[in-house]
Amino acid sequence: MHIRAIIETGGALLGERTLEADGIELPLLLSAHGGPGTKLLRGASHVRDAHADEWGKHPVLCFWGTDFIAALGNERLAGKVA
Image (cartoon, rainbow, N blue to C red; front, side, top):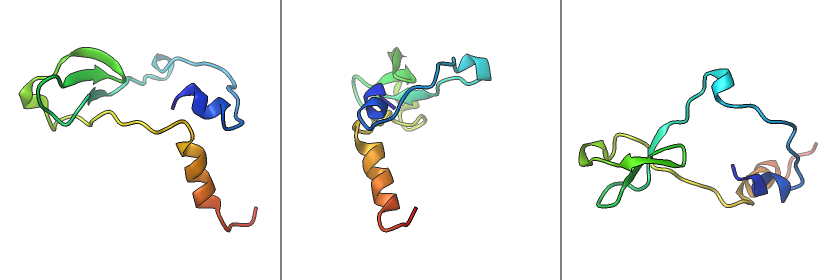
């Protein structure tokens, strides 16, 4: 999630911790569903150009707009009493 998604929706950062501290490694992703110019990524960082035999074997990097999480929460909570 982008930092703006937290800050612009009234949240706050409580601290910082590396993923490695918990044995978490970012996944390998593709920049597109395949085709020329598709990149293999680790998280959002470029690793190398993806090979054709890798197309469809890794998830494709997706993203949400900065207000999506608030909109999703509001939609899910609509009509519910706290």
